[in-house]
Image (cartoon, rainbow, N blue to C red; front, side, top):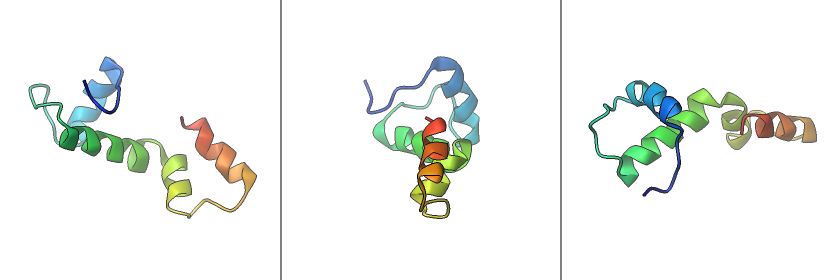
Length: 68
């Protein structure tokens, strides 16, 4: 069990990008690495909105929501 859920294909895609391997423990630290990557690199509209570089309008919020 974990805090986050990943579809297996997505998880396999992300593992190498954050420096993890298939046999690494799926603990809270590694889950946070994966989510951090998803929010900062994989889902750039969300990252921009969170970091306030793309905030300030309903349109920008809607773009961020599209990444979910």
